[in-house]
Each structure stands twice: as structure tokens, then as C-alpha cells.
Length: 309
Image (tube, rainbow, N blue to C red; front, side, top):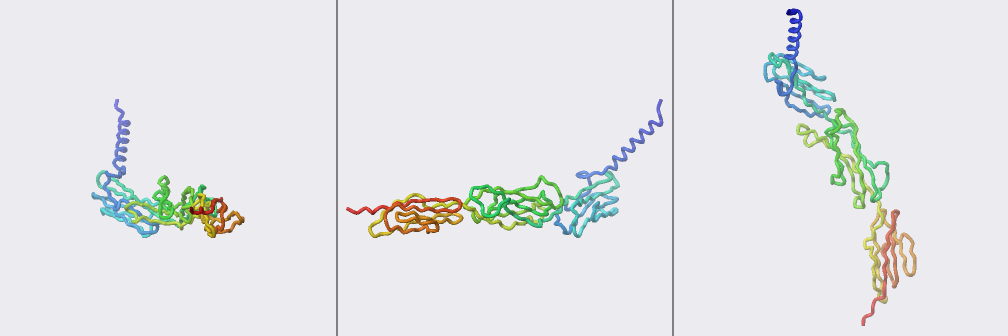
């Protein structure tokens, strides 16, 4: 036997589901709303203006937003405008209620609010003073209050040469944050006096400012200490004629600048001597160039000049 009450209840629930389905909000390709521009990149505190246009007759068209929310009836376009955008969590949505299905549509504005860093600095980690050749050191670059960090590329430079870059795409906060990057270096003597610096670039895409905003750190000049290295370290054999003198050259490069000492057939000079010495007689002359990191020596062997036949 047909249960009239049960059948009526079933039909009522079915109708309710149908109504809910009809009123379901849609977005994307099936939506009749177009936001222009579809992606907006705005600097913190700057003005922003975006239009939303309906492609068919609309009953209500509006913007759902924490700032500048508004709506209009029957008009097919509406503008969202903020004179100074400072809300980091703002996510404006354009919505429309239509006379025909789909009855409700919405489109979310792709909005990027950015801020260049308050400061960027570079420093040595747990070290002060000169560096020593061939030892490892860490440089630290710190960036204060930048957003959104996922668009940040941090580049390291030695002189004018880029030596490393660091991206932060794995991070997602929209609000300003502090980030840092470290660089491992093993300095050589050719790097003495070479400045290191880091540079923060917000690569915000074609809708962002061109060229992309860049902020540079002050340079960090690197002083590198290394032991003396003689320009000509091989032993030299020289001939000395009667009544002649020979100037011996023991020049070396080093940092700190090397001190020189000589051992000659007639005397032993202490440190503080010059790299040049005049040899008045035959014998073995030894020069030593030294600094706090080491020393290097060279011999000059002076022989009597052979007499011609």
C-alpha cells in the first residue's frame, strides 16, 4: 500500500536538494564574471583599482572585501578601489546574483601586496678581523621586513660577479618577515680587498614594477692574510768579478707585508731588513721573508767570475 506521507516527505527532500543545487555558487570558466586586470601587484600603501564586469544581465553585482566592499543592482560593472592598501590579508571577491542559471557566481582577485625590505645587511659569522687564506668562513645576509617572501631572490656577489642565489618559494606568509641566507667561502689571496654584498630582488612577474625592486647591502671588504711567497724562489748562482758588487733581490708578496732577514758570509742581519742586498764578496747569502703565517727562504750562491783564457 502506498504511504502518502512518506512519498510526500521524499519529494520534499528531493526538491530541497534541487533548490540547493540550483543556488550553488560557481566560479571559473562557467562563471559570467570577468575581473580586469585579473592579477594586480600593489606596493604597500599604494592605491589600487579593479573592475568586475558581468557578461549577462545581473540582479546584484558586488565586491566582498574587508576594505571597500560595495554592491550595485542591475549594473553590469562595478569597481573596487582603495586609496591606500595596507591590509595584508585582503582577498577581494567579485560576486554576482543572476536571473538565470547559474544563479550565483564569484571570482577571486589575484592580489599581491608587496613591501621592499626595511634593511639588508651582510656580516661575518662568529669572526672579526682579517681572514686566513684557505680557511672556511660563513657570511650572513639578513633581510628585514620584506613581503611576500616567496617572490624574493637573494643574490650574493663578489665584486661584480654573482656567486650564489637563494630563493624562498617554499615559504608562504603574505605578511612581512625577516629572512637570512649564509654563504660558505674559502678565501684566497686574490680575494684580498674584494667586496662581498648581497642583493634582495622581488620578482613579482610582468604585472609588477619593471625593473623588479632591488635593495643592496653595503659592501663587506674582505682582508685575507697569507704567508710570504717569493717572486723568484729558486736558488740563484751568480759570478762576481774583482772589484764588483752584485745586488740580490729577495722580494716577496704576503699579508701582512713580510719582514726580511739576511744571512751572509760576514754577518747575520735580524728581521726588519730590506728585500734588496748588495753583495760585495763571494759566498752563500740566504734571505728569509716572514710574517705571522709563515716564512720562505732563498739562497744566492756567489762564485768568483771565471777568468778568460
